[in-house]
Image 1: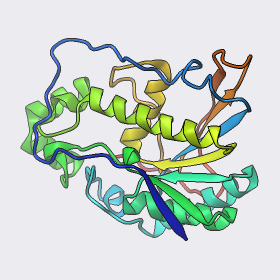
Image 2 (image 1 turned 180 degrees about the vertical axis):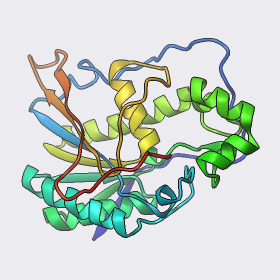
Image 3 (image 1 turned 180 degrees about the horizontal axis):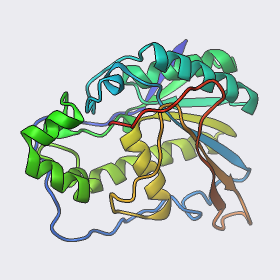
Length: 256
């Protein structure tokens, strides 16, 4: 199976995340105007990876590279079987193991030889929470955790800011739009719970952390793009949110 890196996200390592004291306004929105260059309908299936070993233990994973566990592999197979019936012609994915492995099952089921790995689709850098469980984070960083629940990753030292995550989401949509301009019509995008929040938010121009949008392991959301008059804003909609393919099993509480 051939792979290709289309976008490389540079992690700034130990640079502390800074909580913005004032609201910010996005310069770009992944709205109908953003997709105006497209000339034919496109369906984009946005999929969170299957349950990983980190998910199973309630661990904040972020950039840590956990693999799928047995349950996650079964979820990925079920999602792949369903997606095979949707005529998927292109797969883009985060290069992290849990997403890449999920994408591999989908590629096999859909008869696709090449997965395009996008560095912009990697999971949120969760800063000092990385490697900690939800409960241990509360104990070790009680004030930070409380702020995190209300203010997003902006409150977490060394984590990515909301603005950085929004910009990554836009970069991901731009790469997907480019593929659609080159002929892709049924695109599967495999990413992570945290980044998918921002993929969705960026289509509304929303910059707030809450409310969260359901993103189960192997939950599938479909983004539909319908061109109108050439060069005019496209009609866009989220036609499906967090669909679970038959055989995916019961979902546990998501952890990033």
